[in-house]
Length: 250
Image 1 (cartoon, rainbow, N blue to C red):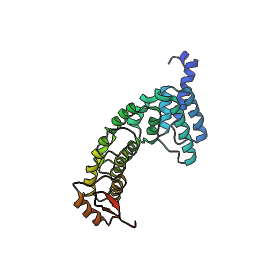
Image 2: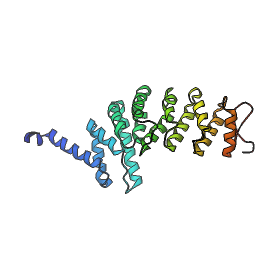
Image 3: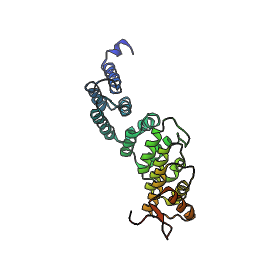
Image 4: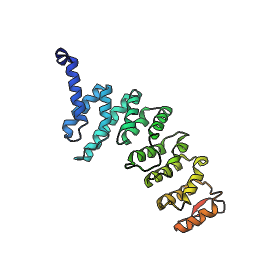
């Protein structure tokens, strides 16, 4: 930037905006110093400002949990107010942010279903069922997908049912029952229930509970399911119609 440009109106605005970006994304400064920067970015609404506001959502202000939540709620409301014009920037954010919860919530507010589904699939494509040092992003994404209304969700998340991480397996189990697609999920869930290598009782109990709630039958697996429920000391049994139900008196 030339000397003239540096002191021009646009030059001063650019410098002020950059300072606001630096303050808004600095977790170490006090909230009284960060809040004016957030307001300035909200009023500016440029791509740079939107990106900075999104980046405010990925860190915690540890000095005051209540203030941290208030700041994030303010940023959330501002970004939602921009509507679908921020979708491209939000998509980039979701591919790169260290934590996804707030960004996914924004996506649910500003994006129509099919476009949102394409973005979610793209983010999910970065993951598989193998070991990951920090699976938190995967956990957040699969939790969100469990609530996302799209007919392809169950089939898309099914590969994560045997994930290395127990929490991911549990979240995927939950999500499959929420989506309610028996044609896709019934048999894989039964196979996990009777899998001798699956050591998580909370997953197996959740599968039994899910079958009881959904009314899905255990056709093709009855004997093995009964044996496994008994070995687990489960409160569930298989009834005469091939459905898992709670034992009487439970």
